[in-house]
Image 1 (cartoon, rainbow, N blue to C red):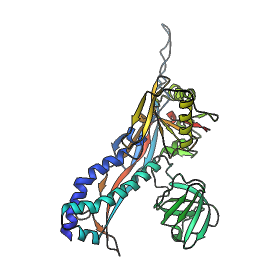
Image 2 (image 1 turned 90 degrees about the horizontal axis):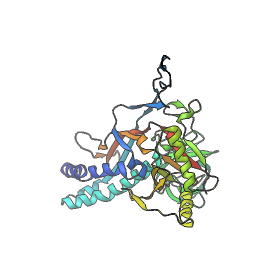
Image 3 (image 1 turned 90 degrees about the vertical axis):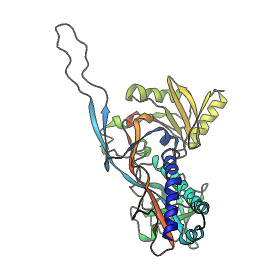
Image 4 (image 1 turned 180 degrees about the horizontal axis):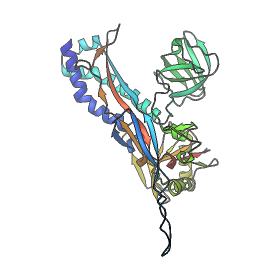
Length: 389
């Protein structure tokens, strides 16, 4: 058995790990593909973000004193790294049956790896647009459905079948409400069917299992209504807040130009990616077709997404549909201002092996892990378009 597991581990490390690592760093989102990736050095990620411009410039005249020094002002952003895992499981029976040759071993791992990667891709993509809290939706009701429970949500954008969730009753999580899998999603009715019996006394919310306040500090922390960002109070430092453009129920190139220009003129940002929520993207599609706007080029992302490459003023900007952006909004970013600081994705090992038996089961488990977080040196340079229909 030990020899078989050693062979499976070698296949996992040599054949799958390099490709899996590359895919996780690019495919979850066009945004993730375009930003820089740097290696995590410390658990606390720090960044010196510039405020405005150097204040030492001034005009003068002969015999008049030169301008006073006005060094560039900076503020320190700080955020802790979060833990990210891809879980792989294989049964003892599968290992035994795969012992005859290498190809059968690969086949035994392949479907499990594909399923685990799909889960990682979906969750990382979602978390990139979250605010770090991990809240997937607000829950207004929990009703028994046989041995299972139907939860009524305010939004089903961030839930999917198979996801294991925790239900918080108010701000409390009981053992009976932790770790339940979603069986089905009623997207029209904004309801989910969840395995087992869950209880709710008032209004609550759901998160991915064990993830409350442990997720990436994503774009939602910049574009959302949270009070702080990277340890800085937003109300006391409005320069870290994005430019907000009210589209008034419309979406045109002139509206996009206004936001991109304001971000460039007043915040020093070169917006190069506009991510549109579902309704906003449909409205923009309708605009370009109705007005015979010619899109001369398309941008193909590694993960399969295809965007429009257009000129907005003097800036070349890629427009792409992003499912985790609110439906009637557009989020614009200067991708050069962002970076993901994280450790490489590696398997956790014990005594040189990556497969560890799970207690009281016949299942072996391997964990691919990375630690890091998302940072932006100029969050105020982002732009948000609202009220698009």
